[in-house]
Length: 393
Image (cartoon, rainbow, N blue to C red; front, side, top):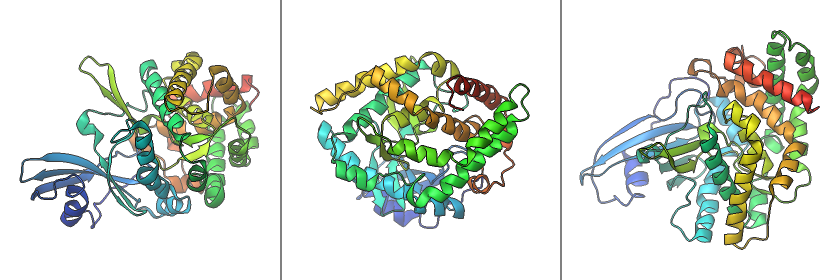
């Protein structure tokens, strides 16, 4: 999202709260005393929607807080999201997919996502405010420790496994890739190419890493099409990927002793029906502390496989996966992790004062101040060394 001062939309008023929020939370007989609307995401924490926190107090003494998520007001972001059907995908997930998963598990609401209270077709979602239950997002700049990563892998595996029980036709028709392919292809090519070229220009200035500048330029224009080829390549099976599974879209709840007591996934706009390795690669190259990615990869894959197998067996699903097979598929698709490190790490590791403007990046106009951080330089140099050893660049 472009860094700007968010103004509360005119429709987010008392009438909307009474009809959409109070009615859906079974407080329709309550009289609204007061409400307060405030932005729910800091600059750099959300790029493809506007998010508001609505605190409500009613005459019968109830106080609650909900999240209202809507289409962005910046013209470029709005155009991209509509073209790629991103908000539409999330609405389909909350309206159709998650209820089917609830039926599978015989539960009121799925354990891995916030409860949805209200949907306005293609434009607004009203969700439970998880912060009121103690859920928090870990500082993206610090990265997730091993325990957080293990819980994230298990939660992702649960989501993936449940999706294999849903009608395949439903997955294909609603969750084909629309970011790198189809209507979003032109934007993706421009955005990816300019990201890679900008990083190449920065790498030119790093002593001892100058050789990587031209290597990156050589792959810049073909990177987006290469991702499409990976998505379309043969895979033992496909699952519903989250598509944007990184630190800012994972919320953790902790006990008073500091132990992890709950986990939720948020922001499902980028869902696509592809191999499970793409969510895992995206996560590994954006979210863990660097030491975790370098030294505990197989452990995390093992956690994923055990949870996936457990859910599949419980639901009597004819799918299985092993750590060896998953690791082999990861190696075959490793370029996806690399390209997302290029696109995501600068924003992940930047401070709030250096968040990227998506339109400027896509058009090659960005000053790319967010590439100047020491954290990014250190981590990305290690990634360049890693992928050079693997022969990927």
